[in-house]
Image 1 (cartoon, rainbow, N blue to C red):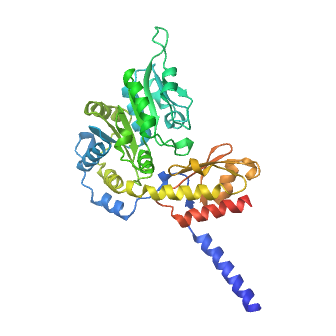
Image 2: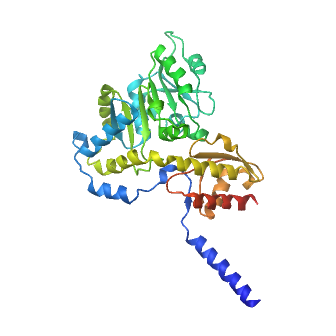
Image 3: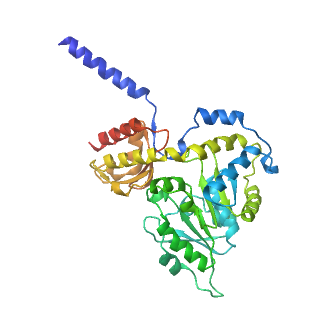
Length: 366
């Protein structure tokens, strides 16, 4: 009996030690991914030049490949998706005009009021279906052409939609919006930070989701796994002007090839493994939906983002408290509303780590 008890104690002690030694499961965002060995080697080996003078060959390759992938004439490497979006808005719309978009859009919620501060633009927040607009809503929101009314300057669409749990526009949803914009002579910018996730989830080439936009931005530093950077894409004339605005906004980079090199790997190799992130997100959502105190329809999880509501029975319905309690169990996630939590799957979180996260939430729910 004593031997059995001792064995049980030994196993429990070592299990606890192993759990203590395990790294945190970081589900705060797909921006937390770290460059792998191949990316680090590419940074060390990158051919570089002064990019402000247009002399960095690695940056040029990245921009050329990116433009070709999404079917636009040219591209510009920028430090962040926010900068890419802000450059586009600055160029497309005149000061005092309106930027129309879904109320849940990243450009309205998480870009520090940049459109107003940097470009004198007014946000016009529209109701939507989980962040996805329809043409009738946009047309009804267009201001009349009167001398005492501001004009519409730009329509912005986000695909996938971050704050509604990674929901997707397919081509059938996009086309009526693009047709309306063309009739109204209204430029349309795509905040495609995670457009590769959308394309993979739909099983289509990314061009099916990027064709017809006046400009678009997509991130290398989210699901694709690069450490830094985004691409702003559009016509050659648009990108020539974007180059100037990037410098004005403080985004001129020098030997940027050390950042572009892992971006090339992310662009070439990252899309092929996004389906794994989506499967992990679906598994996570399905298991969480079965737990007491979690309000979540797992059928709405289309890509790699899982957002759920807390019932009052779990952490008092307090998302900050819930995330703090999970952090003590080495599971990291973020509150996105008073009673809502977001978890995002990515390349640095495998199925075993997802299981750890589910078990930690289950222990709180119990």
